[in-house]
Structure formats: C-alpha cells, structure tokens
Length: 336
Ligand SMILES: Cc1ncc(C[n+]2csc(CCOP(=O)(O)OP(=O)(O)O)c2C)c(N)n1
Ligand code: SF4
Ligand SMILES: [Mg+2]
Image (cartoon, rainbow, N blue to C red):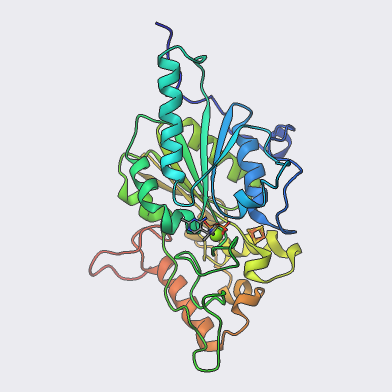
C-alpha cells in the first residue's frame, strides 16, 4: 500500500530575511477589508508562508465576510467558510477527511496544509471548546490561527473576551454615569491553550508588524506535526478608531509596551522572541500610554485609568512566573 502522507507536513524552511520570501501570492486582490486592516495582511502573510498546497477554512467574521463578496474572492488556494465557533472542528475534520481519502487511495497521497482561521470572538470566546478538543488530537496536522482584532468587528465592534480593559465598543460606550463599562482584563488565550494542552507541540503569538518572524512561526506550526495554534494581534482601524496609516506602528507599540508579548511554546519549552526577548533581557518597556492614547477607543481614559492599565501590564512582567505567558507565580517569590 502506498505511503500515506496525510499526517506529515510539507518541509517549510524558515525564510532567512525579507529578500528570501517567495513572490507568489495566494491571497490577492478582490477583498473589501477596511483600509489599513491588519487582519487582511495576516491572511496574506499566513497563506504566503504556507504555500500553494494549502486548504484554508475560515470562521464567520471580517475575514470571511469581507473576503467573499459574491463572484470575487482574494483566495487563490481552496478555502471554505465554517460556522463562527467551528474553526477547531473544521480543521480537525478536514485533516481527518484528507487522511481517510488518502488511505483509501481516493486521492493522491501528498502533504497538504490545513489552516483554519478564526477571529477573537470565534476563537477566544465561541469556539474555544472546539479548538481545545482539536489540540488534543495529536494524530492530525492542522493549524488554527486566531486573528485578534479585539472585538466582534464584523457585526459592528462588540465587546469580546479579548477586548482590552476599558475600551469603548458598541457594547461598552463610556457615559456620564459610568466612564468605564468594560472592566475585565483580556483573556490570555495563547497561554491558556499552551498550558492546557500538554501534547500540543506548538503554540505561538505573532504580530504582522514583524512579518518575516510571523511567517516563520506559521511555517514552523505547519511543519512540526499535530495540531497547532497561533494567536495574532491585529490592529483594526475601524474598531480601535485610529488613522489607518498607524496600523504598523500600533502593532509595534503593542509589543514594545509589553501589552502583547511575542513567544512560542515548542514541545513545552517557552521562548520569547523579537523585541519581547529584548524586554525579558532587560530592555525597558515603553509606557502603555504611548500605545493607548493613539487609539480613539481609549480617548475617554483618565490618568487613573492609564495608571491601572500600566500596573496590570507591569504585573505580567514583574510577577508572572513566565513573563507575559503564565499568569500565576510561586508563593513567596519576590517580584523581578
Ligand atoms: C453562531 C453565530 N452567532 C452570531 C453570528 C453573527 N456574527 C457574524 S460575524 C460575528 C463577529 C465575529 O467576531 P470575530 O470572531 O472576532 O471576528 P471579526 O468579525 O472580529 O473579524 C458575529 C457575532 C454568527 N454568524 N453565528
Ligand atoms: S473592521 Fe477591522 S478587522 Fe474588519 S475589515 Fe475593518 S479593519 Fe479589518
Ligand atoms: Mg474580532
């Protein structure tokens, strides 16, 4: 019987610098995302990193709706829409289906990448159970990429479990009685999924402002074997209320202020990378106000709100057992 390749991935060496990136595009013109939409860039880089032998599955949200206007699509590779909370099950089912077809000789046996993307609403909230289940199925190769624009953006910027503290959304407009409607801290989705799924071989956080690193994390996730998860922080001009030309800068500031740490967890080993690594090694973080005050969704913040936000980010770095990754610390351990 022919060897079945459905459970191995393509060999995808890391890109060694921007000049080594392939020219071919698999997410191209034909979409209707907002000007400056970082999530559209994430789609483009994600599939460029994966290459042509890739199937993309997308749960409902901006990256499904704006990318599938009737009669047009930016996807050059095969793609399929899946229900809002189903990125995990769509990824696992597709991977299992390919494996079965190849085993039965009904399709050519070859490595095919399976990537399911979801937004933060679809991933960190509604589809968390499906993603969790998928990450326990180590016999199937698939990547779930959560593009986190920090709201249910497609339905007009509703609050999600990934929305930052205090942000103005359509569900949390600041008013004269209550200045802050949203007073919960954002979920730690990547850390939760890494810590909670000991047999998942790869979890990473990425930021498309650092495009080559981001693409290389996708390539590693598709190569290592088994189900993997990537959390991407995506500035959203509409939801975050800023001039679209600032998307790249805000992506950098999220990392430089320590609000969004960049790390990968590979076979249980945590590795901070990029500017986050420099912060762990002692480089000072920029004040969070430099990041927050560039965004209209925080325009109502007072000095007190900024200080509270800063203190919570400081806690991630000074108290957490693994800075920016695991939100607890050993009893009696002094702050760094
Ligand atoms: C089960 C279900 N509930 C609600 C909706 C309506 N809906 C469509 S897209 C969307 C927002 C999804 O938010 P997110 O996953 O963060 O993606 P984004 O729109 O931000 O890109 C919602 C609530 C739906 N399609 N399916
Ligand atoms: S609302 Fe935000 S995520 Fe949606 S298309 Fe516009 S910029 Fe992109
Ligand atoms: Mg969203």
